[in-house]
Amino acid sequence: MEERLAFLKPRQMFTGLAEEDIRMIAERMEEFSLPAGKNLYSRGDKGSVFYIIFKGSVRVWAYDEDDQRRDFGTLEAGDKLGMESLLTGQPRATTVSTLEDT
Image (cartoon, rainbow, N blue to C red; front, side, top):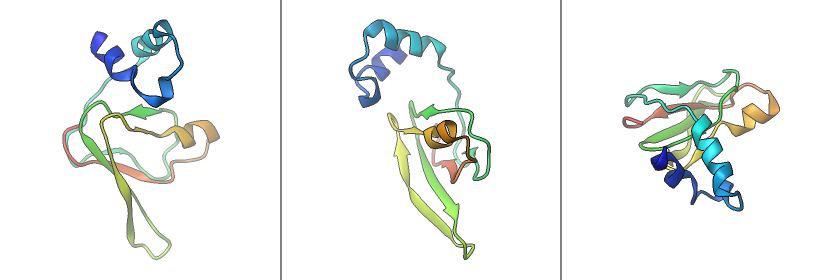
């Protein structure tokens, strides 16, 4: 628990929150790991979870209208993803794949 709290406290999205509020968030978080080369989620999936990368890295990508793969970038420890689909109720717009054990 203390490791999660220490990880979350310096993140910009938690700036201004009291430590007790950050602790409450940390207590409710679920942690899991994925090996390299696995998809965290795929384009078109229903967005029901918001993610914060604790360790490792992921690639964000999608196929364009010409069926060409388009890479949007790499996210690493401390980066967040999945919020837009969660908030809008729209399907995921991209696929996110692990580049290493994450």
